[in-house]
Image: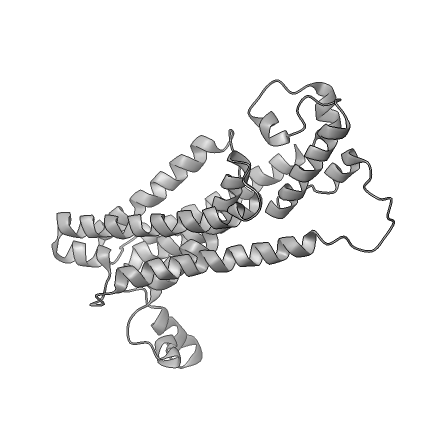
Length: 279
């Protein structure tokens, strides 16, 4: 219950902050029609998260990453992705433009957001695979990457269709190629690279967390105690919890269901199991 309260409070804060950003983005955007098209994705994302919040609530880490990505997307919808003035901002703050410092000749905010798509959303996607499909090991890292790549390709196809249907300045603004014939391929490659970096970082962190620290060799022998040590919203701790749950079920039949995630969608969770297995 305490974790649920913290999650609700966090989501309320994120919702208020995003609402302020959305109101600002809606005030005199660079291209009103492009802003409307871009925000269709935001509306769909919020509808999906609201519909699944009670049945399949994500971890606080996942909600934070989704919030950051939506903020980046909302900023791009206000200026259009090809016109976000990050170069002017850095020139005003530091006296030199970011593009000049890096050596870029185009506005690369769109590529930054495509990279952020993989970097920020691979973790929530992996959490869904772990919790719904009970995927473990190599597949727990490969499948999120495998999903990131075709969804990035699908978005490029959506951009192409929109550009063909609407045409004119709106189609050009939504497509945002800025004259680069390889823009779609680069966007997909950056999304895949971002997802790969995140999954490698999660794998590295998980390998370290599985290394037992020095201490009493008799510690954690009780599987119920092991369950209490893996509390929190971390995805790797959920992996540890799953292993501890299997150990507990093999050692004792006192709980008919030791999975609090299943308990959140099922009323058949006994009071005894709630006392012993609550996280």
